[in-house]
Length: 289
Image (cartoon, rainbow, N blue to C red):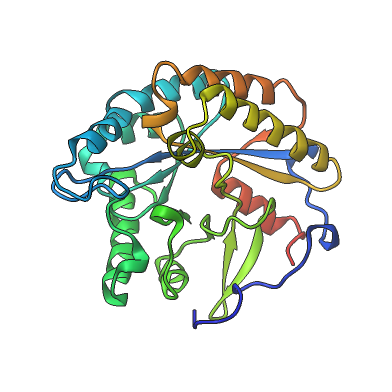
């Protein structure tokens, strides 16, 4: 993508679009995204001390992959919710049992850089391209399936990122948190879909950075759901719940996820979906613009 004033998509306000109808007339697609990330100990942790090793920031993140993710798996399985893992490719080697258990649960994997210590927009173009392609290849080798989706670490892109995603064969990208419905992007004449991720219903900015309690975060999830569920009666919405095992997966917070999912799934017309399922249905629906 060349530098330009706006994104590679038209401005079409939500009240002037074709109606989206999800499977079985569902109002809302529930999309849960566990971030499975790796931070090399010999590199600084972003947002940490700037030193390596940075044990005080590295160790809690390792806890997420040693303990927290398995707690999340148990809770989500009880509610019949499959995750779409935002996966650092190097985590496939660092935490292979996480990948094994996620596969057994029928979870989807989308690319999320090679590690979470290196951000795309800080790389030279040739290095960024190598990282994107290697991420897709590494996840495909470890899981047996090539990812269809992508979430950049830190949601940071360069002007080249979308081009490299198209080259890698991606069908959707989650970085552009500017909507409650999917929409099409035109990337050099090629099609890519944006899927609604969230910077709001996300435990990292809300709990880790803003210092909100797990009870406050749960209330945010419920209120987000109430609004999107009401609006979804007119045209389907996507509700992303974006999670990090080292945050929501600790013992005193996991109950917030359990309670929030129970609340959401007491309602009829909620479709438990993965990212690729959402995009495949959207593209086949005739509701694109």
